[in-house]
Every structure is written in structure tokens, then in C-alpha cells.
Image (cartoon, rainbow, N blue to C red):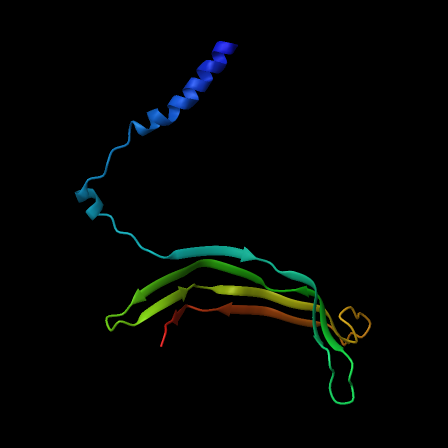
Length: 150
């Protein structure tokens, strides 16, 4: 059994060496045929939910001088999907440099739901709801955004 363990360990050590035996260097002529493209490509999908989003005004307004709050509870936001977002930088012949951000298709799609829209006296108010908000069929897309300095 001890010999079998030693043999297995030796094989694991020698495996990377034998794998490199078949590798060879690329010549300058071979490398001249290779073209590459610099930049970043990003793909992701993100779903966002939140129990409560609250905004408060601590000095009120007019004769209403105490805190007032707007509370959005039970939020479901549209899915954010980024497929093949590309980020590149380049300079034109007249020396203007740009950052280019590009994608195709919708990057945000789906429905927005706010279970309760509350105007209350504290960030934890739950009883002063003025209703529910739903926005369906949201679609946000762009082709290319160019950013440059001036």
C-alpha cells in the first residue's frame, strides 16, 4: 500500500512536466499573423429587491414643522441584464480621445413594483399608505455611449 501511495505521488509530480513536453515556441512569423483586440466585455444578470426605501425631511415645511417621510416598501425592481457590454478607448486622427461603452438589446427589462407608497411621520411608518405603484414592460437600451474630455 505504501508503494502505491509513493507511485501515485510521483505520477502527480511528473504529470505537468510531461504535459509541457509537447509545447513549442511560436516564431516571429507565426506571431505576425495573430491579431488581437483590446477592451473589456462584460455579461451579467442582476435582480434587485428591497424591503424598504425611505426618504426623510427633518424640518418639514410651512406650518408642518416636524419630520416627514416618504417610504417605498416591498420593492421589486426590473431585472438588469447586460449581454456583451463592451468598454473600449481610442483616439481619432485629430487627437480626440474617447471612452466607448456599447451594448445591444435591453439592459433593464421587466416590471417595477412598489407594494406600498407611504407618507408618514417616521421611517418605519406603515399605516399611512396612499397605495401601490406598478410600472410594467420597462425596457432600457442603448447602442454606444461616447465619453470624452473637453
